[in-house]
Image (cartoon, rainbow, N blue to C red; front, side, top):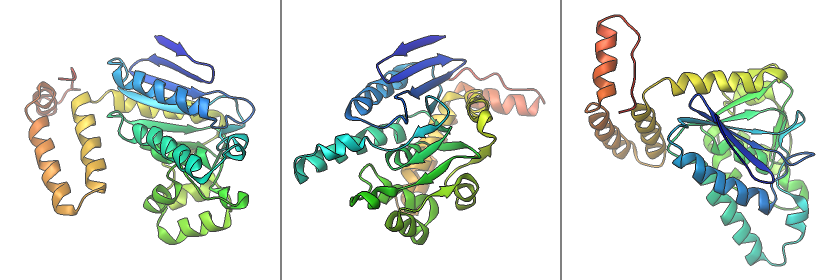
Length: 263
């Protein structure tokens, strides 16, 4: 097991799973320092060959991330500075989406504003049954700036996303699941366990196939169907030349569990 720690973002890796914890009491708000630390931690997880899957969660039991640090927002001196902060935040969240490894958000409490934007940048979301979700920025006279206006409609559809962003209303975990915003709802005290179970299940698969499948999905979502299909065919050709492909097919034909070697 390996561990690294910054002031507010901690990373530990065990059994192929990197656990990234944002721990900034009381609500894990995303200050500029937190975003900078998260940026560096993501680089470390990407480079860590032992980490096949990552989990992102919040410290404590009240909040996953309750949003951006309002004091930071209040300190912005110009529209140009605000635009720069938004672009920097978007860059960090895009790094999650393009990490090349699946990232699971383990949502252990309130997930609002920048916290929801952070969770939506992850590939999968596991939440506790008492968590609340929303983009309440409109109540401060601003709009989501870390990708909320773009990712929320893509996940739950245009009309509902417009409603939530323009009203600032919050929804509970069951509604988030119904809308397709989260993958799994579990009892509040089982969030991290459920996320780790899912992460280990994915980590047991061949690394190359997982990476290529994820890349094909992400590329296809940003492309026309024909372009996505062509990319998928190329990825299929790549994975069909690996040792894991031969092992997986042989194991199926021999009625045994495959032993993938990530090559």
